[in-house]
Length: 122
Image 1: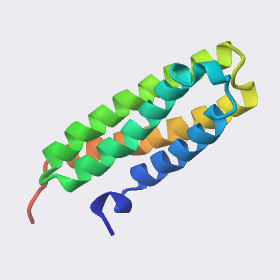
Image 2: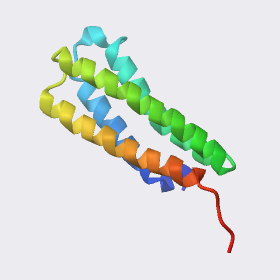
Image 3: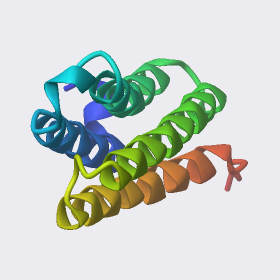
């Protein structure tokens, strides 16, 4: 098992990526290189950064990549809001995806905080 596969934040983010791919596949084809591509890239960026951070040596690196993942989650939030406001995404689908994004964000933030804490030796 790769180090990132042990992260709850990665698992929540991976589920979000799959949901984003399914939902964005329903959006207008003319958004293929616009909003669809941007939303998918932002979602994948979250899992990519968590995976890369987990592979690095030291908590500082994981913290840095977790912060980048949080930025991608915020970017994804904006893409989803635009899709909802344009009518590409139903309010129900948006609420489900936003809750998944929020949960992934909470876990990623918790991970970033946990690795940022100084370790005390006994």
